[in-house]
Image (cartoon, rainbow over all chains, first blue to last red; front, side, top):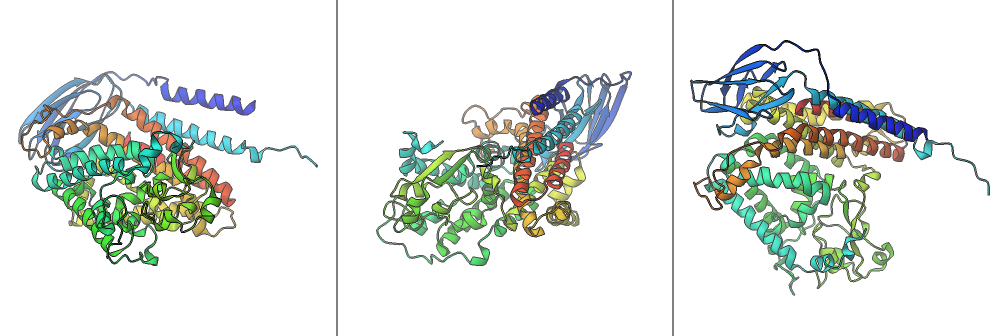
Length: 157
Length: 440
């Protein structure tokens, strides 16, 4: 009975960690502008952090060949010719962590030309860490209640 | 559950023709991949050799074939075919006369998977170039084909698959987790079987190409699912069974070469996640610019993580645990617990890589050489990442699921060797957190 109850608690805890909306102290939206240099096969800066609701402008400057910038999740992109600057404006209305990547074939390592945009907090990372902790706790629980550890009645034949 | 009792499956496996049909398609695809790499466009994302080998094949292999069918890929792999046909002097049934090749036994000191560990690492160190450059992919594919032919001329059976193939090594390791196995039905039948045709061959089929006596099979690692023993067994004593996942891991391995294979695969997935999918351009430069001092440092760090850092922390963790076994044996036994986690690391890594680049498959299907063809009207399919909204939850599921799976395996291993699993679970927990941070 105890083990079933504990398991139920763990499952509920797991569901809460996985799905309950996280609310953070709201920060007033701002206008944020990033000037990103693009070269084969890297962005500089390659990690951007904004707050939910921010109005973001990305100025993409290509320093060698034609490069693009596509943001996963937001499904928006721009392209910049060599030496030219292209601008991308959007509202950061989806929280979380998103990869941005080159969407114009620019050379051998093109599929791995990647950057990272974090809007607010990286919620899935925190949720995953929480789930890992719950998993570890449940494993120690399973270990401590496995049949071989329980006191079995002694039978004398 | 015995699958070979299914009325359709048994005849399909006993006959050589269905397998041959798949082999021919696979071999044609393999040779076309080599040709495309040499004569097609040098743009990797537009070349059949890159798109179909490193995106399509890789996705099928790591997301479907290995987790659910174990060595299922080896059952249809075209690489050993030409060498095997030459070695046997036949394509289908055994010929009347044995062909005259050297037919040597594989050297005893090399009867382990160290060569497979080394061959995988050699490819892994050059992977940034290999994954993105069609002619390098073509050279490697051709080299594997010719190496398999060469070894078939010198050594007996499928020595390349068993001892050298860089892919076969990790497929064998992870095949232990698959819910499918080839095993004998009754041990006593094999004990009294005259001539052991499953191992030595007979008029109905060849002796095990993987140099395995099916009567002694306890785990999937070295069974290539070639189905020869089903054809040669005169007592119908071979079965393909459905079973629980990771049944082979209940009895932990005591082999240090297999232990290091687990570390190689676990660490490689983590390094690739950082280098290829991370936002750090300097790392990509170092990995791609082979021969430079930056690459040399990258290679040293790569090897250090695999052979010193991760095994070092792992060994330190289990150093003080109470056990009657020496440290080396405990190390090998507990490394079994890293097998499910490593597989799930690769699944999580591959999900990101494959879903992002899968749209190249349609374009490459219509224009495999990048020469402006449009065979099926899909050549102009625009690149677009797929299912990005479910990527993070799917990766979380894979990694946390892998952690639970590995921790359970560690607990079982600890019961077997009468030791504590806590250091191993802690190790798994920490590397899972690192992988989560790298991917999410």
